[in-house]
Image: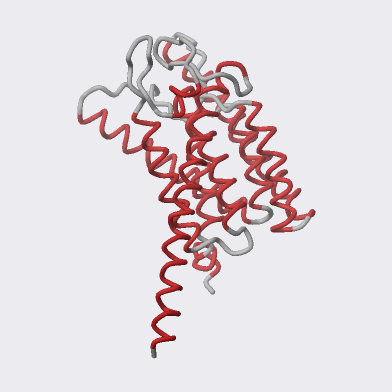
Length: 271
């Protein structure tokens, strides 16, 4: 009986220590995502951190301790702390229930990549070629591991073809909108970066899962846009054909559902 209680206590300690370890790893993964999202838009590559308000260079000690800017005294943005909190929570979730085949470490690496793309697209309305190329390498490696060569390449081509068609449709809509309003503000319903990102996600999801991922992504983007339009209409601030949102985060949301919650595919297949 004593030995049994000691064994149970030992298991409890290991689990507790594992959770602490997973939380620490999630914190550092989120710090990396914040750093890349802060520095990549300045020159397409990582560099020294700068204050996002006064643009002056920060010391590494100042940046890593999350202190206020020593020049303008502006505190770190709410996005920084939200990313850290989500990083810890998602790392704990992955540790306790890692997705089949993908596992904890590749899953956390992929989530870090997703976070960088989402933050940059939300804040700058731009999917960077640097993140596309890095994602293509990551997608090819993980895709082949998860689905094999054929399904990985078919998934990438499908993502490219489907979103490429939507991109051309968006160009037509943008021209129609410009004629309707009498001005061309350069806005596009869908950017070319979204097409590249869909190709990356196609490599990750493979064929035919990319179709489900795109479906959920487009559906989520449409629902959020609809809610935004309704909200603006209620506040009497809506003007026709003026609501455009960053679409990359919704495409990533669709991929996240397929990769990290495989039970969704089980429900869709009716098994």
